[in-house]
Length: 214
Image 1 (cartoon, one colour):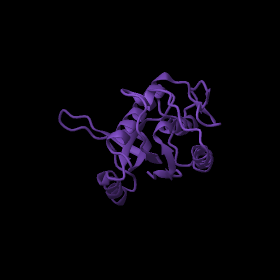
Image 2 (cartoon, helix red, strand yellow):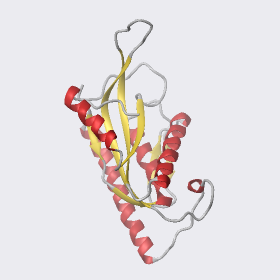
Image 3 (cartoon, helix red, strand yellow):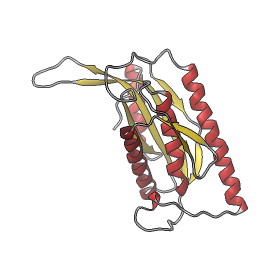
Image 4 (cartoon, one colour):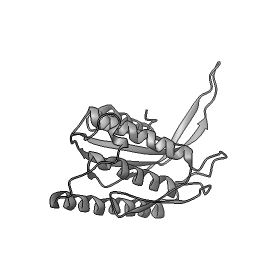
C-alpha cells in the first residue's frame, strides 16, 4: 500500500501560541478526512483572525487536546528545538494468528507532518500555565511577528485543502466502525529524536510504507 505524506510548512510560534496553532491544524486535518458522521462546528481563534471547523466529536477533541498537552510538556522539557507532530491514518488488518496470539497490522496510507519552531519565554503563571489565557506584548515587533505567523497559518490551511483535493486515490474503503475518523494515531518528536526518523526510513525501504510509531 502506498502511503501519501504531506510535510506542512514550518511555522515559528511563541509558547503561548502553540495550543491554538495546533488545534487549528489538527482539527482541519481531521475534518477533511472525516467519514461524514460529523456535526461541523466553527471555531474562531482568539489570537488570529482565522476560523476553522471541528468535527463536533467529543472523543476526538479530547484526544487532540491530550496530544497537545504532551507536545507542550515536551516543549517545556526540551526548549529551543524544532518539534514535530505526525498524524497517521491507517487500515487495520488481522494477520495470521499463532498459538494464543492475535496479531493486528497497521497499514499506513497517509501521514501529515506538522513542524513547529517554538520560542521559549518565561511563563507568567505557575502550574498549568498553558491552560491559561496569556497577556502578550502588543508592541510593533510582536504584532508584526504575529501577522507573519497568521499569514503562514493561512498557508498551512490552504496546503491541507490542496492536498486533500488532489490526493484521493490512496484512500481505502470506509471501515465498518463507529466514530468520525479513519483509524489514526498522533505521535510527537523533536529534532533530537533520531530514532523517530530512522525507524520510518528503514520501514519505507523494506516495505514501501512507514512503520507504526509510538
